[in-house]
Image (cartoon, rainbow, N blue to C red; front, side, top):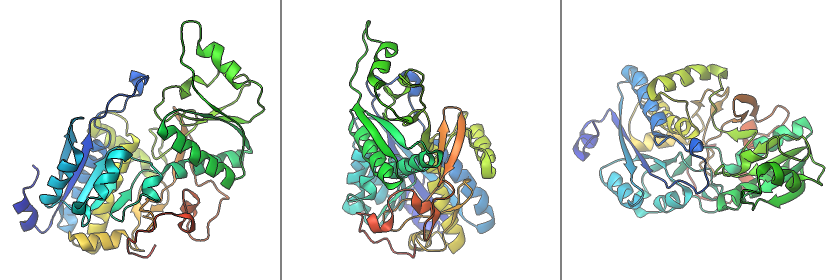
Length: 382
C-alpha cells in the first residue's frame, strides 16, 4: 500500500519511490501490433522493487512504490507536484520529452531526483538538461554511435539514409549524421520518405524505384514510430540490409539477450509480467536498482547520502551487460552498452571491440564531456 506523508517521515528504514506515467494517443498509421504494452516501464519498476526488497532483508531496508498512470487529459505537472508534496524524493517518470522537460524545471523539482525512463532525447542531455534529471535509456546519440561503430567494423561505410517526417525522426537523423562523421561512415544519399500508398501504389512498386540509382552498402532508416521503416527490407532495388529504427536496431534491451546472466532477469520478468521485457521496463528496473544499490552501499535511506553515492566515483550498477554501469556527471546519462539486434536475433553489443576511450570505453557511445552542451553540476567524481 502506498505511504502517506506521515509514514514517509516516521519509517526511517523505508524508502519510497514514485512512478509517474501517462496514457499516450496512438500514432496515426502505426500498425496495431507495434503498440507498446500499456504497462511498459511500470513492470520493470515493480521487478526492481522486488529485487531491492530481497536485498533489503539483509540490510534492514524496505522499498515501497506508488505508481500513477494518468489519463491523456490529465496534467502531469499537477500530479508531479502532489508527489513532491507527499514527500517523494525519487520519482521515476515515463513521459515523452515534451512532457518531461517542463517537470524537471519546476521549483518543486529542485530537491528531488527524476529518473527518466521514457525518452532518448539528446536535447534533454544537452542544452535543455537539468541537474536533477538522470537518464536510464540510451540517448539517440548513443544508439547512432553504436550502429556506426558496427558498420565501420563491417566496412559497410556507404549508407543510404531514408528519413521520416516527424520531429523525432529528424532528431534521430541528426544523431546518425553526427555518428557517421565521427566513425568515418559516408552518407552516399539521403532521401525523405513522403509516400502514402494507394490501391495502385504499393511498397512493391514504390520502394524499388525510390532506392534505385544509388551504390550503397546498407540502407539506414529513421522512423521512430514504425510507420514505414519495416517496408524496406527485401524491397530495395539492390539486395541490401536495413538498419536504424528498423532492421538492425540499436536498443537498451532485447528479448534474445541472454549473456552475462541476462537470462535470469528475462525469466524473472516474464514470470512477473507475462510478457517480454521492453526497453522502458529495463530502464525502470535500472532506476530502482540504482536507488537500491546506493542505499545498500551507504547503509541509509537518506536522500542526500543516496544521491551522493549514486553520482560518485564508486557507484557501479550491475545491469547484465558485462560491465558496470554508472552515471555521467556532465549530462546525467547512464553509461551502458547498446544492443544491436534484429527482430529475433542479437547481432552485436556496442561499444564494438577496437573503439577505445582514454577513460571508459562506454564513453565512445554518446556525447563525451568535452562536447557536451549540458553545464549543470551534479557533484560527484566521474
